Amino acid sequence: MSEKIGTHPLSKISQPKRSTSGRLQRRSLRVLRVWKKDYLHYKYLWPNLEWAAMTALKRVGTDFPKVLDIGCGQKPYHDLFRNAQHWGMDHGIVDTSPDFVGDALLLPIRDQSVDIVFATQVIEHVTQPHVMVRECKRVLRPNGFLILSGPFFWPLHEEPYDFFRFTKYGFEQLLRDAGFSEWEIREDGGDWAQMMLSVCLRLNKWLFPVRCLVNATGAILDSMSESKRLPANYTVLAEV
Image (tube, rainbow, N blue to C red; front, side):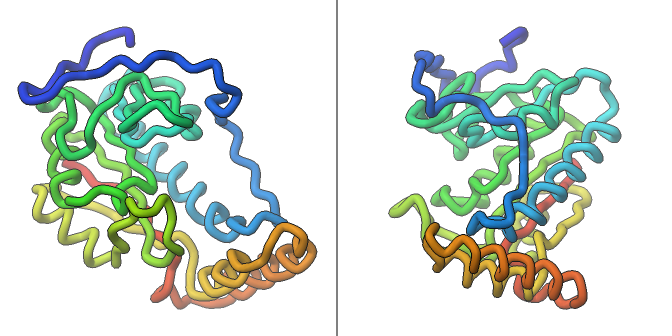
């Protein structure tokens, strides 16, 4: 890291050993493939995350912002913050490539030391999501932004560390309780996308022609419907 962002008085940064495993190759290219079972998930999530990142970078008030990527994994969204100081944090180093290891419920970061906190598909895996959101608010500078995404509908995954699903009102309450001043919450797809996604998740890879048909049908029907009462996921952009 080019500059330290400090440590919490009750915790400290653990520098991970670098792995040479091919699984830790960083991905920065997001390409939709209609035969993939999660096509209808990323078709809506990726544009919303890109919108949130672009909006935060425009409004944060600095040309070289500090970005904390919580649960960074292999940093697939690093390219959204090319003109920023990007630090990736994860809870370990297995199949991840963090800059440091830390706990989302006790961030090893000084108060008001970063401009953007980015945490996508992480909040359902922490035991106390309200504490995580409060920690994000603590480390953000005035006029800083939190970019957050999490599921409303999704099968169990990363078991047994899969604890929560969220409505948009649940996200609003978490943000309100943490002290954020304003926010925008976007659905990652609508009812038809979610319903066809649930079908695709049941189809094995040998049925990829059927997946293509189901995915295309879901995308078309979703574009024709305004109902978003049953989205698969939400993306949140909140300002301090």
